[in-house]
Image (cartoon, rainbow, N blue to C red; front, side):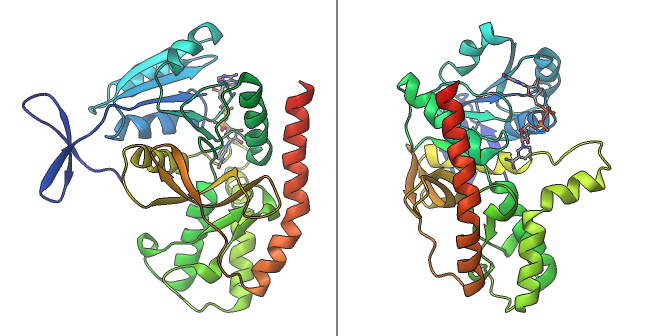
Length: 308
Ligand SMILES: NC(=O)c1ccc[n+]([C@@H]2O[C@H](COP(=O)([O-])OP(=O)(O)OC[C@H]3O[C@@H](n4cnc5c(N)ncnc54)[C@H](O)[C@@H]3O)[C@@H](O)[C@H]2O)c1
């Protein structure tokens, strides 16, 4: 996923693209909840990402140990661990990207909300930022990448094609039937039977349960996929053209105020929220069925934020 980085004699960071090398801007990333089951692998993946120059690992407990461990990897990012609310401001200071697999705080950086239920935590964060006067709808993202990687994997297995070549948009929300993979738009085309599409759709929707059951109650799905989305955000910030990922964002694609769909990422976060394109009858029905549940989760988040 990540390109190799070379240090020039002048000490500048360079990234290889074919034969050319280009300077890589300094980028600070914070992981809030960095000592958790998702936070720790995510912290390590961010440490390994050559686009990251400073990595702030924050949690309410255990971050000094996690930061010490992660800091020993031989990569560009300088790591700092901080613990407890009094150190949060320092962790957030100067950030370009904040990834949240735990609590939620105000910030002007791009914010990747991982904490579940994403369909409610994103509206909660939006309300909190509005009250703090820092809300920018182009900078708040619900991370749904896990649904996309699952849809790609299951589609590639069924179609017997290389997963690296596969793309499947996943729209809607991030829980159960609100997760709607658009296999009719999957590339490369595989002409799967409708019965297979239904099975793949269901499997994508319950992928988390599959992991929980396989772990026999000893853990849940962790968020390696969050590193893919963070990498896409950093590429967008750096001005790489045509970075498109699915994400749960403020949206006018449907009548719902937040909705996951393909989003073009650029220097200010969301450059464009892309529409749904043409849907199969099965997907059209799935879309109508998911709306009441997704609306209820969004409303719950907004009400929760306004009552707290
Ligand atoms: N969006 C997705 O695809 C996806 C995938 C996996 C997990 N998740 C969600 O991510 C969240 C974290 O999962 P996990 O398995 O890492 O849980 P975990 O319990 O292992 O870790 C949570 C961490 O957050 C820390 N924390 C709690 N309150 C905090 C606060 N106010 N500030 C900073 N840190 C705080 C805890 O100390 C802990 O280290 C859950 O909500 C989970 O459902 C989402």
